Amino acid sequence: MTSVERGRVLLAVTGWDPGPWLAEFARAAPDREIVRAPAGPDDPTIRYALVWKPPPGLMSRLPNLAAIFSLGAGVDHVIDDTTLPDVPIVRIVADDLTNRMSEYVVWQVLDHLRQGRLYRAWQARRQWREAPQPAAGDVTVGIMGLGALGTDAAGKLAMLGFRLAGWSRRPKHLAGIACHSGEDGLAPFLGTSDILVVLLPLTAQTRGIINRRTLALMKRETPLGGPVLINAGRGGLQVEADIVEALDNGALMAASLDVFETEPLPATSPLWDHPAVTVTPHAAATSDPRRLVPIMARQMDDFEAGRPLANLVDRKAGY
Ligand code: NDP
Ligand code: OXD
Image (cartoon, rainbow, N blue to C red; front, side, top):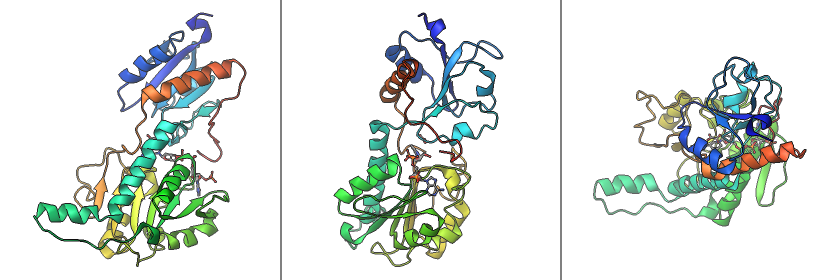
């Protein structure tokens, strides 16, 4: 079969450099043609789309589209398009991405446990001081979102001796994690969390879930001196004005934020220079084309051989 008979692959990315994705795709799937734009309106040659924040309406103008591959684990950037055709959406579940996210979570949790902000401030003032050193075993990390990323991060934190709690939509039983679920489980879950790690998808149900009311449900007294928030899920999960207020009134002691309501984070945001906030630029777990493209190319081959696509998005649930 020629590459045209097999159908073309469209790469539709906004805000990312397409170069490495095109190069990796050419290497991983030399028998498939990848293009940056449809040949015209209603291009019938496009069979698959690899997307990150695709322009709204673009997918609906591809009449022979068989599947959409999100270049990220989250799919809010795709399914927010109300004109999306009814084709399978595949998201990323890959060891490479999962490991990177767990590295970020462990890095931030340990930084809070070991008082990284205090020591950096003291070093800047040439102060030789020792901060209180709580034990990991006295600290409960609450993982909000016990999916591919949350369960891996929980396992790695458990190896370091932390106590674990978790929250998911549907009930779960996971060894070593006090599992809570659904709306009724939210308050008990937040009430046990000294450090809250948010790894939820952004859906109609989760939008704005980190707010004044939910932050107030966290413990005020913790072995770290106060509750800590780490959000690497999506910026739309958090109400930033409420986070700043909580940091200023003691409902929160510190926050590590990788994602924001508006990205890039506007220069005017008070989060940039808040002394209790660590900002990273949506970089907790980067999508590395070298690791991810071969997985997608394999999935296309599987699909054409009649095997089911893995890691499909449940459009009704929104993730
Ligand atoms: P999964 O779909 O595997 O897991 C999502 C988890 O969230 C599941 O446990 C799910 O519950 C839970 N959940 C969803 N909706 C609700 C709800 N309404 N109430 C309670 N729990 C809910 O996703 P991943 O772990 O792969 O990824 C999570 C998110 O991380 C992505 O959606 C993305 O937004 C973000 N991300 C961020 C990156 C970054 O660099 N900052 C990189 C990669 C991902 P259940 O188990 O019952 O389904
Ligand atoms: C993702 C992301 O969803 O990079 O994978 O945010």
